[in-house]
Image 1 (tube, rainbow, N blue to C red):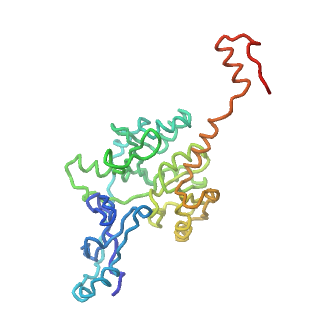
Image 2 (cartoon, rainbow, N blue to C red):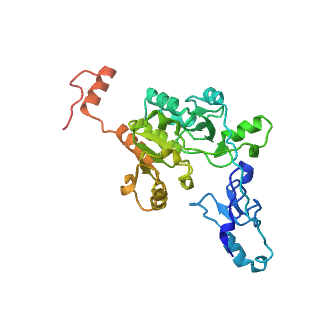
Image 3 (cartoon, rainbow, N blue to C red):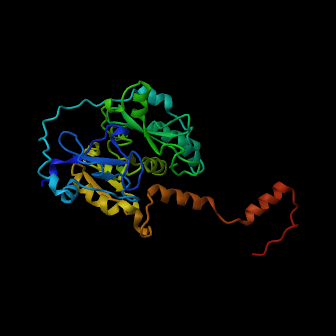
Length: 330
């Protein structure tokens, strides 16, 4: 049984992702299909929730369990595929949605200045929806928007999960639905979040993160670097990262993806140089944090400082308490 004739089904909208047979979550299960894009069975695939679920059944596992189907199943050899033209989101829609009126930026305004928030919003063309969701647009090296990740955050800065809002939605999906068209008719080819900044800053070091939120936060703290995001643990692929060709790159893996990403970046041989940051070295075993969590932790620590004599004297002045009424034991 040769397993190479099968592959995970390519993403063509939410309808191409199914309910996981293990964890039961919808739109997160990718089927293994043959050369004609026909699934083998409804439980042969992989759940995208690798940490919390981790379910995967490969074609080999399926045929080992069902040997009688080995001779019956005859996949058609793949034919040469025609190049599919990439579709784009009209840029005026990105400009219309651009703004800071979303829950994530409201939260980050506790730690960053208004000018920093506006600057990063403008640089990445971050958008917002009527539900206060944030839009992370994927704008490629030519300045064309391929899609945008729409995410809802709570006022505590954490993603909202569950049935209140969709945890993740896609701009191209909403765009097609508004036109009464099928999402599968949109030919999506994703790129790095922040890719459009690379051409504008050709000599700067590039820093690559997993999540878009991490790139945005780090860009406000270390603006001397170009911060981009691949958008997911499994998305650090040569195809997604090809815009990094000829660049000096520092990779900031999430703490639970260090070993995996240290292997994956070996395939990015087109970079001028690439190395893995050791920001995670003091993280406890089992940590799932990222560089943004470390930055915000430090921001919070700096906000909490002990009360000084100077503070007390200032309060006395504001309250009209005359000097001498309070003594200090140092």
